[in-house]
Amino acid sequence: MKRRFTIAAIAASIVSLAMMSSGISAESAHEGDTEKAGETVAETEADTAEFDAVAFLEAIKGTYEPLFPIITDPQYDQLWIDPCVSALGEEAGPEAAEMLKSACNGTIYGQEAIDAFGDGSEGAQFDCLFINGPSTITFDGNTISGADENGDQLFSHEYQYVGNLSLAGMMEGHLYETEDEDAGEFRYFYMMSDTPATTYHLEFRYGSDADALAQYNEGPYAYWLAAGFPVDADEEMVTNVITLFCEENLAEMQADEAA
Image (cartoon, rainbow, N blue to C red; front, side, top):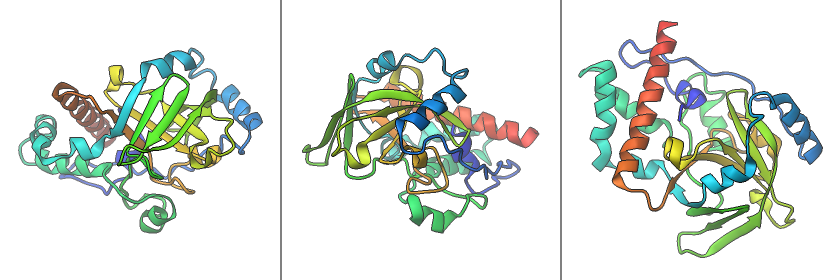
């Protein structure tokens, strides 16, 4: 659950903990057609040669809601503070916990976020909500569907695996596409490798332009990466996902400082 590009893009120091700025240009991995996506597959094949597209969809089967509104609820504050205090001490720990909580709790993306954050070198906040209407998203084999806050279905399509795709050279993921002509902003689902069994959540993007989905601080999806949490998650999974998020990002931040 490392947020290499997310945490690194947030405004800078907590006590003596320096954060590394990420001004890497996004790699163009798709020109809007399957042929270009095939070229991307060849470029990243060595990294994800063993990926099983069908098994992955089976591993994430279920219904998800946005992660961060749940785990940043005040009732879980101590779960954020404890690993930060353990890593940084009583003085710096609580401030670090607040920074980590805010890192992915943004509410703007695309041009609005670009106007606010530029290239992210001076700090940024990521939007990890679901965009374009869904309150929940369901993965059921090769069918992906979404429902609004009233439970009414917004979309439902069958998707086929297109190939591997790199998010600005920082994260590797897997691109799925539907052939339905009315899919609009749900034409592509760009899935990171997270599953509930491994990192207790999902990370993904969806949209109508695969090239734009491969950029992180440019284009219509700038500063957005959806994070999904099982709607039937228990308190243990809440604890696990918060702990993992804190420990991995704190370790990376400390490594950056030591470098």
